[in-house]
Image (cartoon, rainbow over all chains, first blue to last red; front, side, top):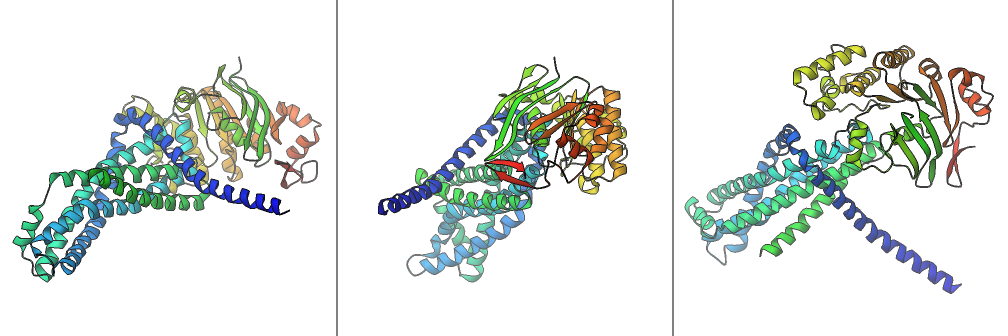
Length: 265
Length: 261
């Protein structure tokens, strides 16, 4: 009897571990297959130019206001806290350097990625999920229109192009916020701030920033499309798809942020 | 050669066995109506014809070509032979009526915008929806959506049209207008049609032949006259719309199968 109990406990534990590990691994494999189907649809890009531009408008241009607000305050906060942390130890001639590095290497791409993942990634999942549960994606397939080319490719292409652009905008908005705070509240003049900003400014940092943004843009859009395509179960399923898209995009952004940083430096 | 053939199609979703050996043939130019209870697998069977669902076993033939194992890209040329009217019409929400109806021509043909507009206008007129080109799907009633969905299904001049519950949810007058459309399309465009429905009035009106799907198999196939004359108690109960009989109103899972109990 003790042996039976022990065996049951053992099987229960192994089963739970299997479920906890197997499901994410299976999902990862599914996502890779999904990306493979997307790559196969690349030859259809010329037919999707109008759709790509429409997506670029939605993903890029309409995200500028939220990116502006977040980046402005991110830059202002960074300057304020950098001043607080460093003023006793080093000259404030490096304030511009500290803010620029933070925005370029980390805050700019990550905050922009998270904002776009929330605004666009979950929205993509919700809209494609709604199409899935109302058979609109099936309707495209039955008309011999490849849903990957018509729905996924424009969104992913637009995201890959526009997230780096938004990130660059984010940097400039952040610097603007930081400079305003530095000049008006921290007693750091415009000239000193710019001196610090330029002094340790390397093009390689810009490259890393853009690479991060490219990776984030690809990941959040692919995940949004994937979870949208997989949605089932009506309105509740669509809501779950949107949540999963955002959560997995956020995890992906932070994980790939580390990987790119580790590889670059 | 039959236009469409299903041979011993079996399909399960998890533990639920929906199709348990479906054999069906459709001749060119005929209108086959498939009847059966709600949730018995009629739509699942229909989706096998265009490869939206793959069977667990069995074969699907279209014009003598076996399409069972075809991948997505291999299925595209086959799907061009089909028009599909979904139960909810499945119009793309972000596109207007004219964009929906002209979608196939826009994405798949080299037709000019003016040629596409002309085709859209003709098809909308055919289904009694002239003048609605600039409406959005959200502006339309259920019956209007089905008409637009039908216009979209026939815009590419398909050889075969599949109708998934075309009259479900419609008032009797709108339902009969859809029936009239199905008949007129058959005569004007000489298309092969498969209509999946549990609406017996519609079935009797449009069918050249009727088949009944029950518990995953075809239990009846014949003309409307044969349907009215059959002594099969299951068919009789369904056709006459009686709660009493071998088919119980409730479903329950028994040994992994969804059965009437």
